[in-house]
Image (cartoon, rainbow over all chains, first blue to last red; front, side, top):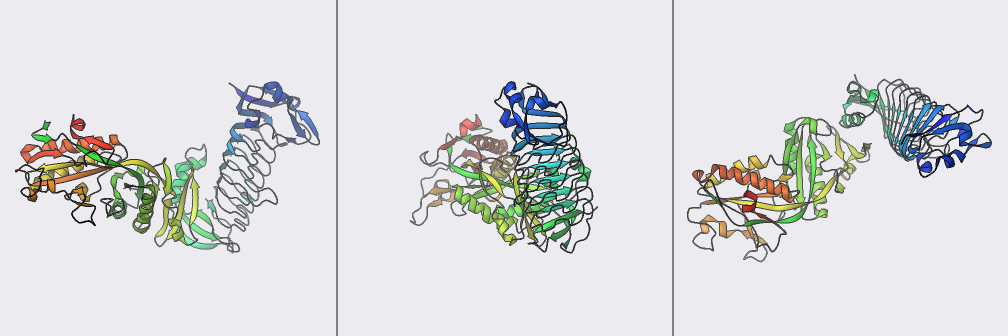
Length: 271
Length: 298
């Protein structure tokens, strides 16, 4: 069976809610039924076949071709299966995702993987603000799974994050790891201002020294036994994180945010 | 059956169902992993008074351990799951947590999950950190030499305890030399431990005693000094009997260990004073697993 492929016919002016097009919802549907589904487009509803050419039939393997930054909610609450996005994705990519895989070849917008529960999200371009965060007003962000970003991420990555891994090959914006409750964010590039702002627990693993902060206390240089196990878990990824030269176990440990409960940590590679 | 002049008795070892678990201890080097493993498996020869039977399964190469350091695999056997969990936790807390540079990992992925580092984390007094990596939870517990890393749980599986055979020799040094040769070969078999000191027990027991308070007492039928005063099982030339007890995950594992052990003893043969191989049983009424010596060596 070939992948169920949605090829964009034209770029609509208004944003599109793509949440009906997830593997578990399309699993038992005939092609004509899928074509007749409606998507919210701005304030009106449009049929799927009005927006996309549909080919293939394997609903466990969905491909969205010609995607652009106004296609929101791709892979919302995805529960198994795989979605491949060729192009950019809009906001709320993988919102509340439960399992399965999403890969985006381009950039993604705000709130990607927000409140994600499990599964794997790979972004080959850049990600917007609030990656893996909680929806506004909610207290729990990403609760599990892993996100790999090949490019840079915006502000507030991992805001209110509870569990899981966010791996960033590029740079992270301001407030990375803000209000984190637990989990791990690894940043190979540079980090912005207010790193770990109000974080309670969790780990920020950095390749480069962040800006000094009075809210984090230096705990000294250490060789930590869990790091080789963590890096070993990255081996299966097609990423710089899988490269054995990227791994290290000697770090400078900073504890904070001391204005919060202060059980979080920033671990900075000692080369 | 006679092998190299050694008579293999037409009898069987009688074994019992037990619960078992395995843990992997790693450290900065093999020396300290072994020290920790020896401490953890100490005073664990028999469930009669130790609460469990434990032993070192084998030394692990760094490539085989979760953290890439030298390690030792240990196994613990107990009569019930509750007792096993208690023994594991107590021993891990007192012997591995305390041991310099150590880390502790699960040795069985499946089975019923029982606490390994899950409760030891409270030693961290709130400073402990959990890390969920590839579906496995680890606890990082701050200690004075750095951090003690322990996997939260390990697997508990059904197992068998009490496989055994007896080596009957013309002298005590000959009996011991034969048992040493057997243990050396048996330690190469995975999934088994020989829980007694050095793998050998010289005080095999029978069920019951003339003293009401004791549930087990010396196996007088195999005590050479009692040949003239009890219903002995020994011929006149036997001067020493030693036993090797085997606990294993499956019947096949114990079969294999007994086979290589008995073969090693028989290789020394009658020329080295080894006269008979026998086994301990309770008439087949107590243990559901019977290891017939002649079938194993056939």
